[in-house]
Image 1: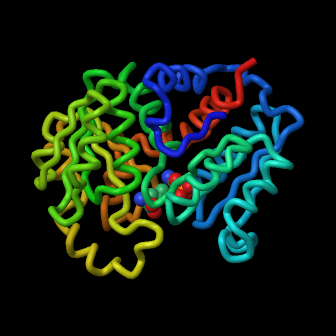
Image 2: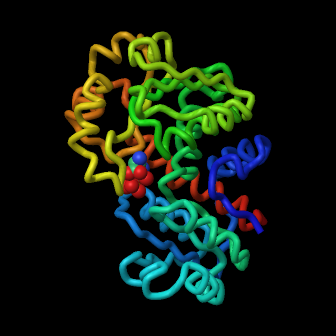
Image 3: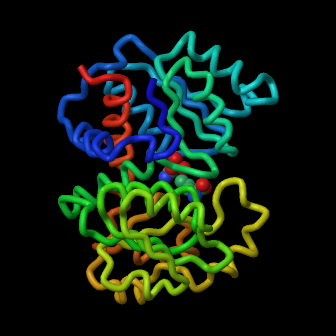
Length: 295
Ligand code: CP
Ligand code: NVA
């Protein structure tokens, strides 16, 4: 039973294998006649669509379930929901607020659980991120990825994936929004080179990839005003991209144009954001083909 709660639930070899499967032209029909439940406590454009299309391409039926409708821990417990869905589906994907909810689904251990974003991690995003770096440069090894902004769920999964594949990961965050020792130790345990700093210009210098995410993640809306001022110097604009040289720009999206990134950067020739969004589907298909058994 394979669960993917964070990207380092995969070994390095498995991660490489998933990336190969993601590029496979004929998807194995591992979900033929089967369903996958997709539970969303938060909004989604990319994750829902990429998962639904991946399940379809693998021969299965995706069933989208709104969090409000089933009320995780309100109408019934996470465990009771998981046990019920296990009677219908071959796998469950869930986007939740508290990471403990996907851990509890996995602990039921009746069907493979895929974390579709929790407050702690976004492994399916990280898979697409490194797939996009591979598309661009041939491999992650020896490449440097500079992440500028909040040290959050996307940063954590991305840093682990880059580290696992032998890349260099630099994070520029304001002091109050940087990772603590526990996170840094986990990132460094991949064997990758991890640097943290405060100055975004220092982070992007000579980088191959400049990466951005929103300043205020879903669930943090009450902090939006404080965060906007704390991150005022962390916008990716043409000045910062010029300082990076000929780096490509990635953003997990949605982008708040004019906040963490300017429109001219999103729409610039250096931007690979649409490629990254599309890669969510290829990465999801590769992961499910791996987890549900290729044939
Ligand atoms: N990047 C990402 O997860 O996008 P959605 O929130 O739209 O799914
Ligand atoms: N860090 C963001 C990512 C959105 C895809 C959030 O959690 O809202």
